Image (cartoon, rainbow, N blue to C red):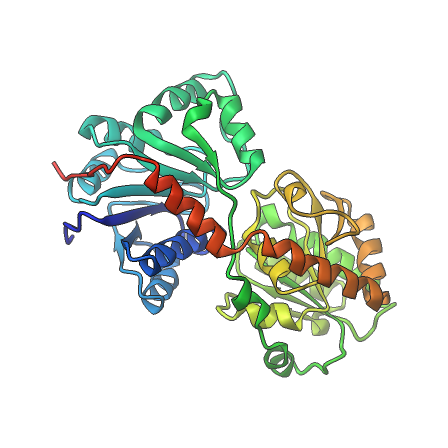
Length: 386
């Protein structure tokens, strides 16, 4: 492993799989800091899922290293304490910033930071779930260790901030910095490319889902809602853009419901703006979110948004103003709302205009500026390999 000696460098260490919003936000932040004249690089686990992400980093001009000293998968693999110590001993940067898809860091990471007596770092916690129980031993340990090891514990939503407060993390170390998106990029997609790929006419109704195909995102609920309107809108199609553990289950369900010819599985794509531009309706039946990047992307693209009303989403979506919302798991309500959107062009136009206005408050530039201010407010610390 090459040892960084850039004393003005930010080292982003991602305990991420590379295919979620947590990794995307880390990459956008690193690229933004480089544009501001700071050195920045990313380290993340050497697993199959991070290959494509590392390629994205290289395309964006962000130095990246995949290391076997970190572990990650969707279930949250345990870290090897010896490897984590080795990782921290071999790095040197003026600012250390850890990112995780969880709502706390693994105990092995916290122990390694304490053992090496590294200067306090930064951490961004992207999980929408409460994985600790307020008042239990793990929550108390996290609440004690966090202010010792970090200048700031950064949360992408007020929901996440409240969770950290409930764990007992002191208020002075907590900071909410909302996720942000490149508005110009997501507003500039070419939907004709996607429609040509799918063989669809310009006015063919297309419902688009752009996220992981896993339990949290509830793609089977969306398929069921589509089946519920399929006869009424016989020209309508549905596209799932993403991969995950439920991909095959959704494919089988589409065959069983006799709509397979109208349901498309695009897999992982890098041209998300084009898919958003092609969408008549963008749908996300997620059960929980932490200020979702996917929702921000859809709003920036001006999509008529159909999504669940859940913690995290309730900080950005306003029912019947910039989106139509429904309770988690209420497929009947989702079906009704989808029918309403497909049948009412004026409603789609109104929601689309409001979506673009909402997105302006959550630009990537604003998020990067907030992180830069956060770094600047902390002393010039050195993370020195020991």
